[in-house]
Length: 603
Image (tube, rainbow, N blue to C red):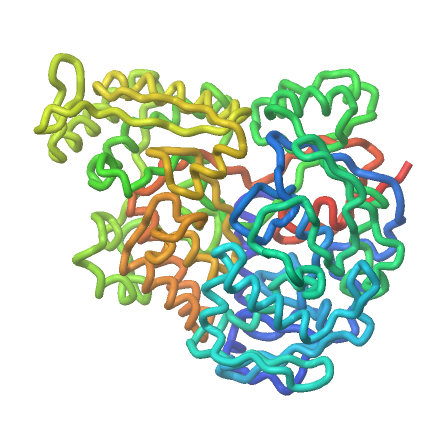
């Protein structure tokens, strides 16, 4: 599918799902809930559309990860937990269909109920839902999980908990949450909260990092692990949910294992040697040149290209605006001009990768070219005094001539730096106080591609009189420093969906700028951004929702918080030929809910 065809298909699908249904009242308990309109799947659906209900069970899959882990609690701020722990072992009240922008169906809950205003949500648990230790999932477990995560868990859970005015048991298997804030996404957000076993944590500190895995109700249990080296998950033969329609064709491997290595280069070598079974290639040029090894030639390894229709998200180098050196937007704009994307892309990718042009680029939620118009302009105009240049008038990233010199870009950067009070003195860029322009770029060990990008960039900055120090740290130090915002500039990646909502507060909301451990690494504190997030959460029609997202995209992009690099509208997976996936691909492609969820092992 070409990019243009993908965009056309996406527009049609989103329009069809949203059109004219936003204010329809939910008539009593239902099997699912959509952010706008009605769920696409009927109550008697057989399986998710992108799953193979006849997929065989058995076999194993082995992943390779760079870095390590020192905790088995993925729901708190402290420690670093294995990537697959939460999705493989813990379930939520509702589950997401990744073939719809934002629609949830009953999982632990057999039904969900809300009103037209979405002032409350009520969930009724399935009678047979059980934890992996055989104990039933109860309303008490649900209520304890919500309160504990909302008060002691990671900050990403706190905002929704603060919007719950009352929590009460309304039946033997029913619990109702009444809201104190208008937020149409809340019923869905609460449906995705992990449910843990209350009894496991009696007499224990939930928010202390440790190596005791939470007891969940999911398809897998932790079978074995060695911190920093590996973790193995075994499919639970007594899993309560194996026969649910929602789960048909999912979780097919008997064993899922993650092995940890020092850096990405070592992971790739382990893949070539057959020690791991899947490699996700992020470099288009390497995809064409680096796969002439024995396993590929023999057919033991095959290559699959997975298209998707999701937004580009934002990936690149983020400025920490908490630092005085990056507080002035003109300095950030200057460093964006100095970043020679076209030359770097040609050097590392053969010029094949498209650039990220905004946070929601490659989707209907992206800011349009030129001046803001219509509803988007109406949303932004009240904040005209605080918005940066380009938000209303139009903005685009600079484009170089592709040569290493990038003379036009560096001249523009010099003018902006002079306007911000920085001038070159004896070859060194200094401010009025004589202080040199020096900063650190923080990278994680093993991030070889980003290190190559930064090395080219640092050389260009030296020509401006800027001194750049590149520091590489292990995964534990990286997590600690990022959580404390202890960096000047660092690598940054946030994947975005077609249904932006409450998570946006933790990504770039003003309150998140002062909270440890959020994704607001840039320290954004903008009344316009906050207002656009509120507009997204209170939108009652497709048109208002899309306009709010496009306005948010403008405020973020013109904030000059990130130097964007590239994205890909396909995922490139090299994998053991015995690993299979369905022909029918979800609209989100190779994202959450795809690998390993719908894959299976077949000789």
